[in-house]
Length: 56
Image (cartoon, rainbow, N blue to C red; front, side, top):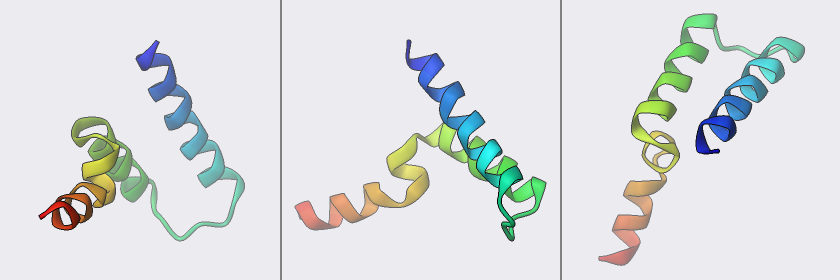
């Protein structure tokens, strides 16, 4: 079921990007999506480092 959530999130990002006048190029969107898929949401967004700093 996790794969379905990931694919829905990817489709949501692409749909939003296509329907709104965003500044990101197709390459930038692809890079952001790949980083999120490979690293996970917390790490790709930078939240992991913030959480780790707060816990020190």
